[in-house]
Length: 110
Length: 112
Image 1 (tube, helix red, strand yellow):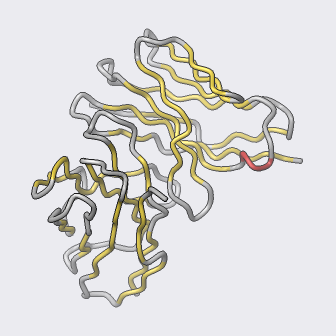
Image 2 (tube, rainbow over the protein chains, first blue to last red; image 1 turned 90 degrees about the vertical axis):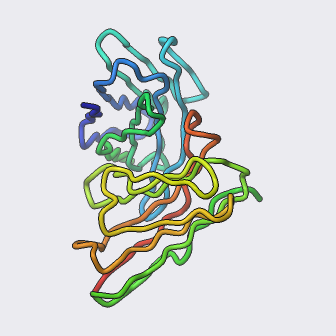
């Protein structure tokens, strides 16, 4: 079946790079997404990548996709305290629905 | 401003009562979704609607009902049949089911 897995927690120091990893199972996924959730708020769409791409960069965010290994990562350069949040990876299934991972809590220490 | 609104932000109800959560969008999106989020877990899909007057069950539809009488509105009713209704409820919308979904701020429902 469709499943998305993420590590639950990541701690980094302010100014370092953060790398959040995600694996998925549906090889027919066409789009993969990264969302950010701050405490008590909804999800904010950060970026997405189409399955025929290997990499997408958007300012401090870099998304890498290894389609062979079904592995997706989000790199945040020069991580700031305002980046502290829960980050969700999601794949779009062939029915059009999004399948979410359980979220990675990013803690940024000053 | 375009966006998705959910009201209220916090909602308290007694056990056995039905409660309706509001979701409105002015993004002209065709598709709308309801998710449930529990602590430490990802989002689980309750119901979704691709077009007015049509909706489909998601993965955890039991104990919930929806309607889609207008493109802009997709209210969710949590019925007394829902065994564990206390959770954070998120509404989202997208251009059809092929686009990225945009989320509202959520409603935290507590059943006492």
